[in-house]
Every structure is written in structure tokens, then in C-alpha cells.
Image (cartoon, rainbow, N blue to C red; front, side, top):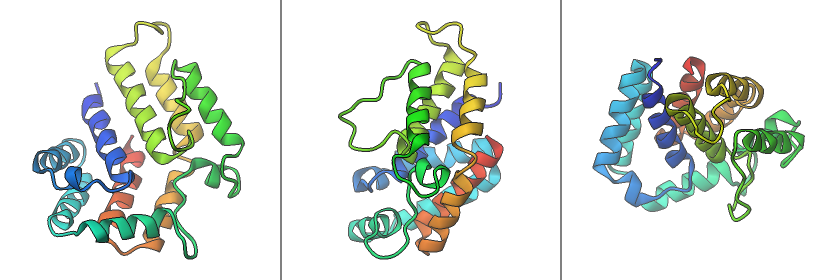
Length: 196
């Protein structure tokens, strides 16, 4: 087995870092140590990025984290790194055709998108959570959908809806910010999807 558990765990960490900053999580030593260890279990380059993130977070203020998050992913000035697949897959159209295709893919795999979620189904956070779900099903199966080849579903989803836009997204992040957290997060995301 290809270290599915470690990859699933790293997806949870990436999800946390792409959410609006939560200082309680970012200051949690156990969380950060496990993040670094999980990264090392997968790949040495991922480990180096994780160590950079850990060292940065030790001294980053809550205000600095919030400002960099807003500047990088929300705006309001100039180009931002839009965290939505549709922006890259549908020629800068938010909530485009690919958003519905991604939602349909979730449904095919037994997940109904909760309408109370405050974001679109093609947000990177939601996509990372879905990939975690796919890895979990691949590793442990899914009683409700025993005939699905979860490894094939994961590969199909990655090929159709992830690997085609992640490089553009991470380049945008790197071009928008010099912040250690978000630059290393972009580099880590890029590398993770190269080896995934």
C-alpha cells in the first residue's frame, strides 16, 4: 500500500492551512509536530516545507496571519490566488461548469454537498476534504458503495479536477505573497500533487 494513511493525514493538514487561520490550531504543538512527522513520512521535500511552516508559525501574530490570508485569497486589491477550481478550469469564471461537474462527482461517490457550507464545492478546502474521503474509502472501503474502485475514483478525480489547475493556483499564491506560511504551503501543495 502506498502510504495512503499518511497522505490522507497530510490532506487534513493542508485543509486546515487553507482555511481561514485559526490561531488555536496554528499554535497547537501536537498538531504541528504531527504535521511535520507526517510530511517526513511521505517525502523529504514535503518535510522541509513543513519545518519552514512550523518555524514561521512559532512567532507569527494572529493579525499577520489574517492579513496574509485575506491578501492572498480574498483581495481586495489586485490579483489574488483564487482558491476555486472553476476559476482555472473555466477561464476565470467562478462557479462555472466545472463546479457542477465536481459536485456531480461528489454525488457519484456518495456525498451530498451540504448547502449550509459557506463555500462552493470547488473550493480547495472542500476538494482536499473530498480527496481525504476518497483515500479513506480506498484504505478502509465503504459499506454503502462496495462496488466502487476507490483507487480508480481517486485517480479519475485527480486527473479531471485537481492536477490540471493546482500548478496555476500555487503559482498565483507564490506570486501574490512572500509570506513564509503561504509560500511554503503553495510549494508543499505543488509537490504533494506531483507525487500523489
